[in-house]
Amino acid sequence: MLPASIQITGELLSAAEVQDICESLKEDSVRLLSVRGCQLSDRDFGRICRSVAESHSLAQLNLNLGVVSSISRTRHLADALKTNRSLQTLFLHGSPLLDAGLVTLNSALSTHPALVCLDLGDCMLGDEALGLICGMLPPDGAKSGLRELTLSANPRISSKGWAQLSIAVAHSSQLRVLNLDYNPLGDPIAGMLAVAVASSRTLEVLDLEGTGLTNQSAQVFLDMVENYPTSLRVLVLAENDINPELQQQICDLLSEGEDDDERDVPPLQPGPASSSALLPIRDKYQPIRDKYHPIRDKDQPVRDKYQPPAWLPHSNPSPQMILLTSGLGESLLAETEM
Image (cartoon, rainbow, N blue to C red):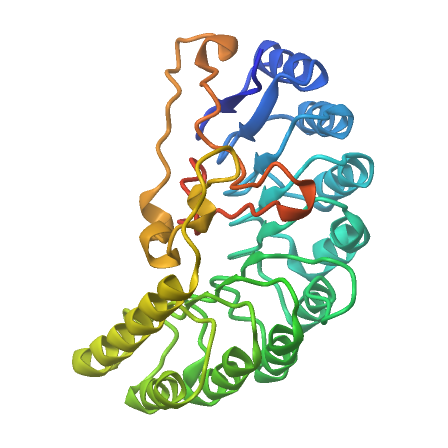
């Protein structure tokens, strides 16, 4: 039997439902678990975390919108991540972690052998936490690190913290997607990020929606894509004070670069190695907030809501070629809204 998914949104979970979830995790019959915005007791949260630790099939875990609501729950999650070896994507968007929570999670996150996608949007993080996150973006020649990172809406981070992140992004050997939307960045920080993008050989998507930018930032990015080779394929500048014509010029140039890349790629051979991960990135990138679709009916037993594995890592049969993203693929749970 193929692993399936459990998705529950904004409900009060009973002990029986929690027990059913735990049994399914221990039986390795769940690939995707989302309890986004759900209410459950500390005891039941601990039970789920212990089952996550035992699971060998779980690849994506969504605890968005306040599920990890205390330092004790953060410790439970950290203990689970230290034992689990299968998780590839972790959503903690809207959790009041603070810097102390990231300190608690840091060891488990930075040493996890499979984790490639992490959402820490709106987690009330500051510079201390961001310094730890930069350690999850190792430079060329170091260990593998995150391929997708979301840090939306963390206004406590200072310009010093963003400068530190820019340096890490410039030298990261893995990062493909960076979501920084709804942070008060402004033009000076955007300039630092432009330098990081120009230096990066892997970054393909940068989301700067609603970050207080002006035409000054747009002109810097336009000069970059006009005059320098870059891996960037998607730059989101919506909800900023930027001339729409400038935005369109940048978009057109990025599209041209993508077309050039396509001409350089040999035709795909039919077979299991073909994957949507090999499609042009612009065809795969969708606005993250449009892709969450709750499927659970309140009166339906948990087990009845398993779905076939519509979400799967975009991967090659070779384990060295795994590519898992929530922003680039057709993930069911790529949700970052409050």
